[in-house]
Image (cartoon, rainbow, N blue to C red; front, top):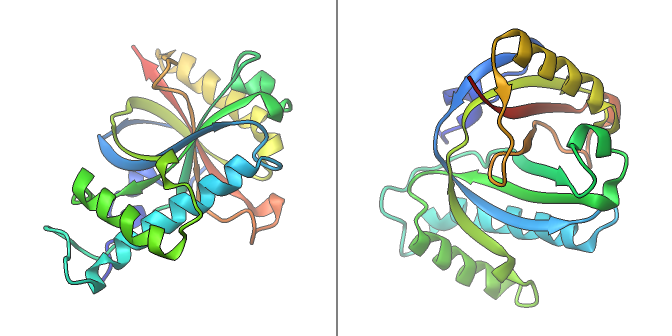
Length: 210
């Protein structure tokens, strides 16, 4: 059976609406940085193609002659995103999508080393020679102590959930700890291309400190 992190680490992907405090472990991600409106940005669409293409190439590396050391089959995890704006906090800038700065990313199993990543890039480049894979990087991301909540509905209606999460953080005796590395974080539990806006489920996560 393929390992599904949504099932083996349910606390990271829990879908109930009650906010919670969580210690997020260090994990390996393929990441792509960009800016602008994700609905209209060609850069964002390219990032999606690169991230999914490399992720599935790693997954299917079991079929090649050089299977990575420690390989195990896995379900490709959900797309995630780190978000900020040039105009202030994400909550107040959410309608100014052209001002978004984003890092889109997909988690990888721990066996994905720099060598495994480079091999995946070389393999995927043979299928998509015109795609710029240099925009992608492999990074260890240690988010640490966070608070998170589930948002149901369209992305534009997130501010209400964000405000409720911030109230929960304050009432629980914690403080927001936003920085260059630790940002507004979203985990997308379904595909917006195949899901109506009112049925979207998104985990919203904020870094905190005591």
